[in-house]
Length: 80
Image (cartoon, rainbow, N blue to C red; front, side, top):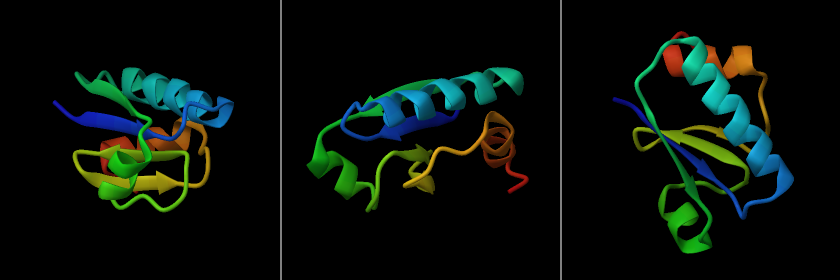
């Protein structure tokens, strides 16, 4: 089961990324866990330098942008 972490201070951009990541994972029928990481030391420990960011199973997949649901689905399915 993949662990999807949305890293950011909780701003509207972070919320949008979380919503899109959730929709992308659901569109793929994934059994997943979605976590929100809001503390800067924890965000930096994951190697994130720009928020919002999406980390999947410890690997930074997105940072500093909000991709479309389709693009996030491609990242989550491993095709991108």
